Image 1 (cartoon, one colour):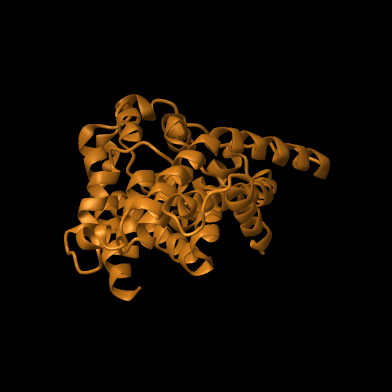
Image 2 (cartoon, rainbow, N blue to C red):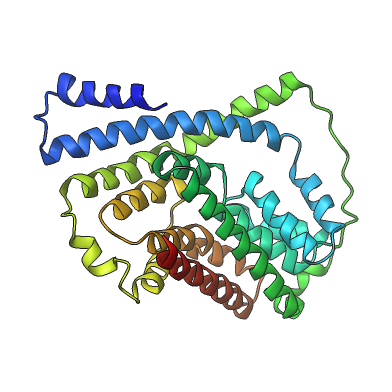
Length: 319
């Protein structure tokens, strides 16, 4: 399917830019052109398809659905909805307030907060393009498990007292007035949303693929494996700690993950790194501090972090 894109990368690298084959520069440039074009093609196609699905699931309808579900069922459904209704960290506070006001249990809300940034259409597209279906499905499955278990665990702790009091001052009935959209409206919405996402992530894609291309072309094959290979017990927790303060999204981190894996870093370690960057974002914690007490944020980060570390070790053992 991607053979024409590889042919384009070869033509530009060796025909237009006239870079000598079998050199480090040629390897890096060819990697950059091929991965960049492949990622943008996949993003445009799949985000458009996901956007059509999302047109049936506005935020108000999501809150209404989750408010009616029991614990456990609500956690699972919230995690699944997080895949097709992703929010960035800047949406954390209105999202959290809206869910609580609609009567959604806090544990269910946290399942959505974990799944929404961690598992989204950008992550799916880029993992599919760089690693194939098996790794993409592994990532989605493990992310869902972390989101569900984390939400259930936090819900069991009865964290209401760790939320700022003003959050509970106004409880809504979670009413939702459906808005009828024609298929033309949905297509236009999907086109606008796809263009908006591409505008937001194109720089992340270029930076991420650029760093990955440099690693691909210039970093020795055994250099990273020596410090973060499958046999290094400390690699997974270290990757999680490194990922927390980084501010990026899937578009920026997944190409880097691809290059690290190619150079010998264990797959579980790279998955743990990517999960920590997207699900344990330090900027998101700073935003959530306005509605949660620090103890709840630490509990949230600790439970999710332990889950990510477990997944990292598990996949290092089986992949």
